[in-house]
Image (cartoon, rainbow, N blue to C red; front, top):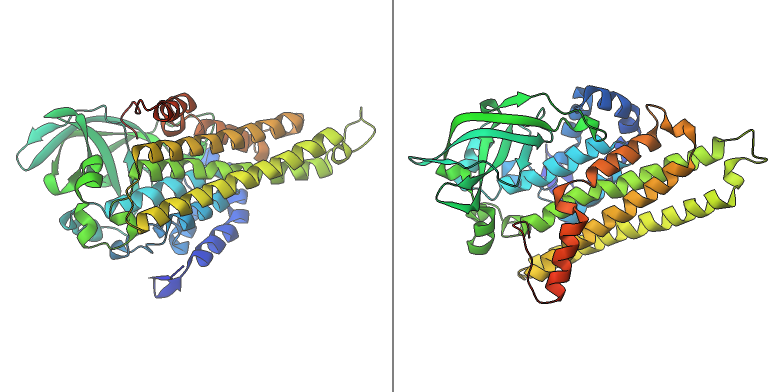
Length: 396
């Protein structure tokens, strides 16, 4: 893949995947402390900033690399081997950064004029209705689960159009405008800092308001200044499903590494041999390795297929979007089930705080609860499309 430049360096797909892989030992070392902090640690933030990993999908005009989706996904799968919470932020912030390139040039200029590097949070699924104001809208309300808000300098918050409640508006808001409630206490993904943010009568000008669905259909306002494929009209809901699913693959791979290490060191006074000699555990390990490899290959092959279609000018049909999303749901299911299987076979020792396999078990089950990859909704739509009935729900 053609290289992109950041801080005077020309960086390629291989460079960014290598940088992500090189961070894994550091992320593992910091994973327990990250959980205790309930947010990305400053030193982890600095390493991500220096590496450029959060700029993979960001438009070059905004200080990013503008590399492809497969680069982003492969890098996220690497960082997830080290720390699920950090990889979650890597995936979501990295994905959301590219959407800033969809906004009108005037909005992008505002973003460029503020603090760098750019870290953007996004909350989809509008439950707040905006109020119409001259030249824009006014927002009052609260938005939960804002992953990475501690590191963010801009947020994209969804709200219903006051003139049409079925129309969702995504408003670009400076971090300085929001108040943050420290309420992220969760079973897993503890270090994501996915807190609640609130606004009170915040004015948002028209140039910082975008209906993603209409932009996809009618033309991306920022396409004139950003020439990459993702900025010209990609199906953002489909890309987001890939972003949510990617950390699950790396979590599964990290769990396999932790399980294998456990097998090589665990003995039991009631058993005549080390666990590495148990046939049942050998079978579990062999199955898990194959399943994780299938999940990784599926992720990258489907992402490559998606990008090839977009680069050739194809529009992704509704049935295509539904099928991509369902594939990501199945990928996460495979990964979470293999982690569960390994966790249950590894003994009481992995139940202790700070254990990597226990952390992967908790993280991947919290990840699996995200609305984008809820299996019943995705499966229903996949079945409906196959039967010619059309999908239901707004997120297609």
